[in-house]
Amino acid sequence: MYPEVKAALQQMGWISGEASNEAPRLSELQSVAKQAVPTPDVGMLSINEVITTLQQRGFTKPAQSGLKVIRLDHPGLASPVYVKQSSSIHARLQAPLVLHPQYEAVVLNLISQPGIARGHTRYYHNSNLRGFPKRRNGGASDIAYGVDVGFHSSAALLVLVDQLLGEPRTLVSNTEHFAELAQVLPEDIALTDTERDALIKARVGQSGYRDELLGYWGGCAVTDCCVPMLLRASHIKPWRVASGAERLDPFNGLLLTPNLDLAFDQGLISFDDFGQILLGEDLDPDSARALNITSDLRLRQIDARHREYLAWHRDNLFRK
Image 1: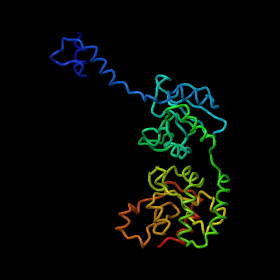
Image 2: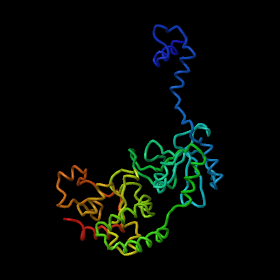
Image 3: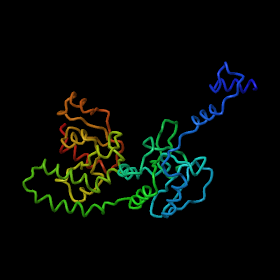
Image 4: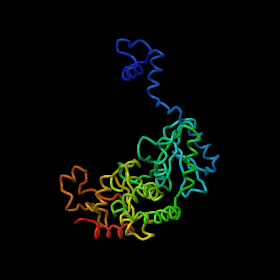
């Protein structure tokens, strides 16, 4: 055996120093080779199967080359979708399909369905996701990102596609639901304001308004929590004092974890025009720490249309 080869094999642990004159056994080489190759996600749709299923559903693949992702367009979607590339189109990846972040709420609502799985991290980053928003991901500059998803069957993929083609939800789609609430709630004359607000919050949490907030925030408006079951949707300017248009306006809503939601509803916290949290005098420091509510918290994003509602909350509910 050539000395250079022998030294390399010893360095990699394929042969021992005592057995330096022996060639590595075939079984040893196969064992090392298996360790070097990532285990495929058996049972997941392959890249080719994902692309074929999408094309059968009306997606088209524009001419493209040299990219690490494959773009597909659909006339019913404002944004393209991407499929990750691999050395083989038959490769089975954990989450080969990449969607625009605006569809994160759709994915979150479907991951409990059998056959649908998310990637290992919240977002997949790739500079070739053209048309997708960018964010900082540890590098020196911002990079495009999306939500990656995998499927155990074509049927599971089609469930997601059908949901996407029904997006985006519009405020008009919620009008009928809210009109029904407006008719029912006034009849509950025995309810106190607190009881009425609790009932409205429960019903709003089951409505399309919650989907609007999930679509905008992608999770808690303050923290990184993105588990839908742990988030509460509520109005900044409460239902009982809001106009019909204000009740439908997603910028009059926040999606918060229960501790923040209750503190906000009770006026123990509020937010300034820049989204910075404000702690009320009635929230003592020990209780704030116990609830993990600190002065450095802030809304993750804020639109000018939030500010009028936040100002109302500070002036009318916040316990300064």
